[in-house]
Image (cartoon, rainbow, N blue to C red; front, side, top):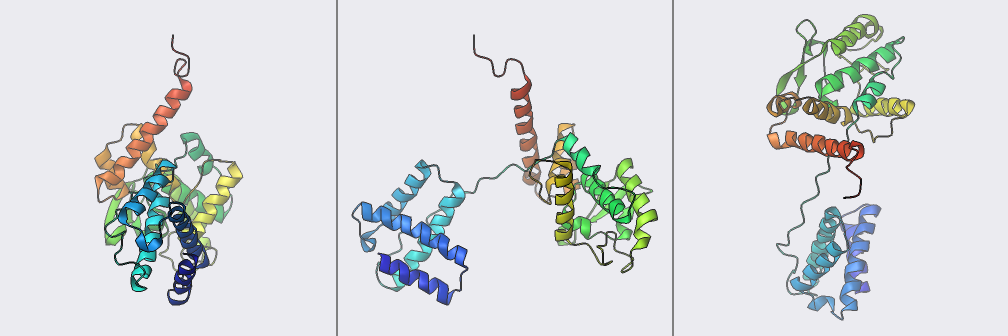
Length: 297
């Protein structure tokens, strides 16, 4: 068995050029599986679909995550294809084996207080601070994706009307309302700070060189402000988008209207925020209600 595994991994490395981390994952998954077969006295050439399913059931009983089991199935499929080519086995026992559906994690969301702290972090006495303040306010006010934010041009801003024309996925644009506070900071940025940058004039948010700010550049900016303010919630480029959605729903927003603002093609993508809001409400309830954690009497 060890000889077969060594030859297989060598083939993956030499012919497919897989990265070292990927090879290590294959090695780990297959070593554990082959040890299981060996412990039951089953030669790999005699292994069957029943043996594979039994092994996967054992992983589930051990509490392995769906993603881990899914990766194991990928490793086993690839290995058995190699064994077929080498004529070690006559059939592939992993054929039509379904991988478990990955768990859909609820999005990380800031509290309203954390969102306020993050948006108050930039110093507005400098051009960069005003730019960052306008970006954060705009992101939390509209719930747009970071990629959409950095793609904005001046022509997408309608301050008098209180709207942003957002260039969405697949060329689909949408109008998103803009509240007064976000409009104030965006207007101040455009008047006081934006003229200090050279480069393409149509770009709404430039980097220090004057060209368009990238998603990665914004990611560094938001991480810095989160660290400066001591926010412990895990921050991702989409954290303010998620927070926008959940906070609107918690205050009575309509799901269909929220779907349009977020640019979701399918309402099921929007419903996840309702689930997240319900989970947060349950957590607050359990933590706050005087009888939620008392003994039953």
